[in-house]
Image 1 (cartoon, rainbow, N blue to C red):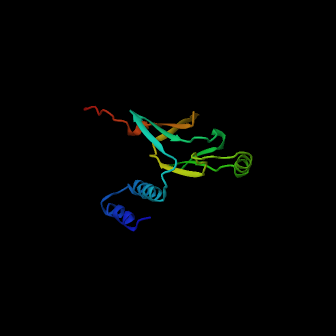
Image 2: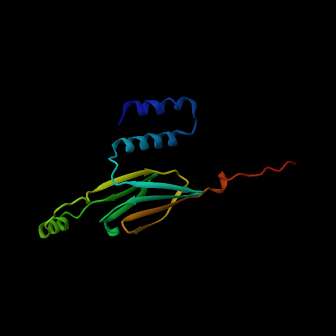
Image 3: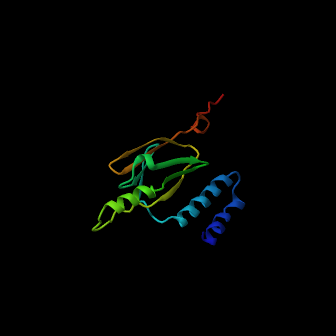
Length: 146
């Protein structure tokens, strides 16, 4: 973690009331980005109140992927089956192996009003669908004048 990151965020705290949770989430997000390796590659798209995270996972079975959501952090992880890979490497004579089957843990910080709708795997591309669910209390209201 860069020391200036937390210091930069703390500059806002004297001027905000009730935003401490958001500021902590921003700090966690920056910490996760600093620790990230860039693997596996991913896309994030938005359409109105819907979001999609696409993660390229060539050679990974959907049964081996773990998707968890806890306290505003969506975690996608994979741990390769070492015994299976050792068997394949023993039985196969590789001329070139360019597809890495390495483990990873990718974290995404998500807002409180974002809900995970579902996930699917197709042709090596994991797609996680999310949707912004705006509570009635946060929706605009028209105030009638008496």
